[in-house]
Length: 101
Image 1 (spheres, rainbow, N blue to C red):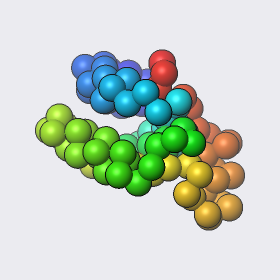
Image 2 (image 1 turned 90 degrees about the vertical axis):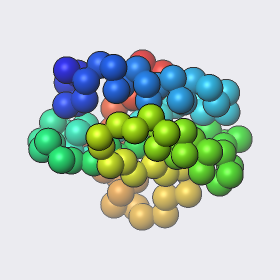
Image 3 (image 1 turned 90 degrees about the horizontal axis):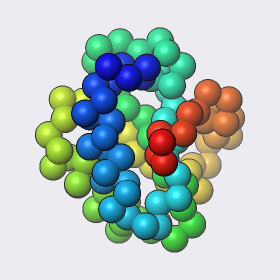
């Protein structure tokens, strides 16, 4: 089990999805799993860094994660499209690099 409450196998599968998309420069984990106060049913909050990642590629990545059939809910976003200053501040304060590991 990793320190974010996810089995190492799940982390590896998620990272392999991101690795298959060269435009993905970095993925940041934030929210309760990054802070360490997650619960068993907590979702996985991930935001992608990469200027060349467009909305269509984000949807492809989301579908590929869905195809993994992991028993978790996730929230996937592009950091450059987040316009909530409080959320951006939260990501900067508590976010941890999820990919590349």
